[in-house]
Image (cartoon, rainbow, N blue to C red):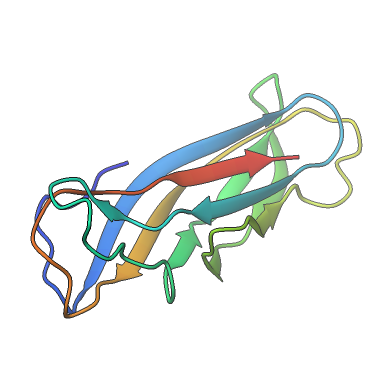
Length: 130
């Protein structure tokens, strides 16, 4: 994931990245969750909440294990992120037991509170596939 090194309190912060799914058998559903961001320089500072954060998954195509397109496009999706997993993407319908390789670019946007303190912040973005 690529994230800006500087952030402005009261403004949105956006990080981008790429991720993929390799499904050997059957259909899948992908979910995403995000922890609060804690200040590593000032541990007593109020964590930055994930309230209002969004995750945008770009379009993807399902490709077979042989590298052949399956002519199944997965549309872009945007979900509100929370500390508990949120489903945002599923394998295209009708694939059955076909192998599906799909990857996409994503953008994570987090509104920053105007009262946040200066420092290095860390949070955890989790992708899950079931």
